[in-house]
Image (cartoon, rainbow over all chains, first blue to last red; front, side, top):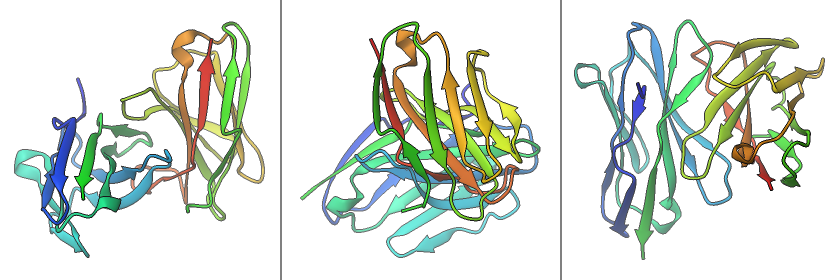
Length: 114
Length: 114
C-alpha cells in the first residue's frame, strides 16, 4: 500500500492566489517524520520542512505554511500569494523510526500562471 | 544549493551494459542515500550507506550495488542494465543515519538505457 498519497497530480493557479497541496500518509509507527520537498525543472529536490509525529503545531515560514493533523493523517502545505517561481513539483515524504528510508508521494505539479 | 554533487549529469547506455554513478556528500554529512526517480513518479529508495556500509535497502535487485568511501562520497553501480533502469538517479546526504534527519539532494544523473 502507498504510504504517502498526493491525490492532486497537477494544479494551476493564477499568480497571487493561495494554493494548498494535500498529503495523506499511512503508518503504524508512533514515531515518524514528515517532509516536504520542492523539485524545480532543474531536477534537484529542495528541502522545505521536517515535522516529527509528536509536534502537531502548524508552522509558517514566509508565504509557506504547513498544517499537520494526526487525526486525519494529513500534512498539507499552503502557499499564500503564489508567485511564478513557485512553479515546481512538490513532494511529501514519510520516514519511519526505526528506519532510514524516505517514502515519497507521487508529487503534485504546481503551475503558477502570471 | 545543497553542496551535494553528482556525476555525470547525463548518461546513455545500452541494455546489458554496466554503469557507475558518483556522488559527493555535503560537508560534514556521513550518510548517503540513493534514489531512483522514474518520469512522473516520486523518488524510490534504493539503499543507504553509513560509515562505508550498506545501512538499509529498498526493493531493488542485487544488480544495484554501491560503495561509500572514507570521505563519505559514494558510488552507485548498476549491472546488466535494462530499459526500465532509465530514470533520474538522485543522491542525498544527511548529517546522520536515522529517520529524523532531513536529506539533502544532489542534482541527479539522468540515465537513458537504449
